[in-house]
Image 1 (cartoon, rainbow, N blue to C red):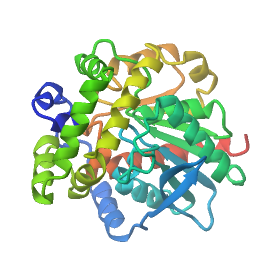
Image 2 (tube, rainbow, N blue to C red; image 1 turned 180 degrees about the vertical axis):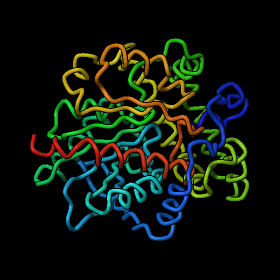
Image 3 (cartoon, rainbow, N blue to C red; image 1 turned 45 degrees about the vertical axis):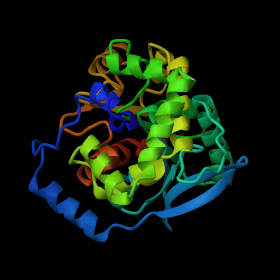
Length: 341
């Protein structure tokens, strides 16, 4: 994401999937529901907590009569505030019956809490597991995991070791896409600490520019579909040296850790408890992987979003609401029989 704003690299990495949200598939009922959500939804609460010695950003909406707890795991960057509209919409669409929590990645924050230390993909996985053990171990209601991009991979890894009953992967990055020139390029630059330092320094410089200039550059690079709040977050949280260094280091370890094929055996064993949503044009979760999943695990629920959203769905309010509607439908229709497991 950040590489798009660092010209001339941005021209190389400009994603083909960047398109505006089409009206195809919309209907009056969805439109009225969207308006209701915007006007009446309950706001998330930001909380900074210590998890195993690391400062951690949380967004949460607590339900007084919760029948489940939804834990959301972001992609890379793991700045949870990007998902504010999505989380608030999801809470409302679940009728206030679920507590919704999103956990940020270590050092993907506006403040340099960890003094420049870099954290790998495995360390971020361990961090989320520690959070569950610390904050959710005594929760009496079932846990549902929802992950976006590399967060979907993290969610699956946590699913193997937790008491969660259901796992949803959104635009999932589950395996290295060897056919993607964009991924190949990111892999090469993330492997060079010198290039990463240069990119991080340039990004930090852009972040220190006057607010109007910084936001203008972000808006021009990311496209008109981004909300003003997402543009602000990019300027304040992502365009910082420590955040960019951690994003690129985590990306390097993602390419090192992820296989060329997902863990088919585990997905088969949990086929009633796992579901995926792919994008129509997304190199992180390509359609050939969607087809592979359908072939290898024909009974698993997997769908393709064809509304014209981007991989960064949470950076527009319309994208956040559409995906929240999809996730709420999956939870409402697929977890009732699992709550007794």
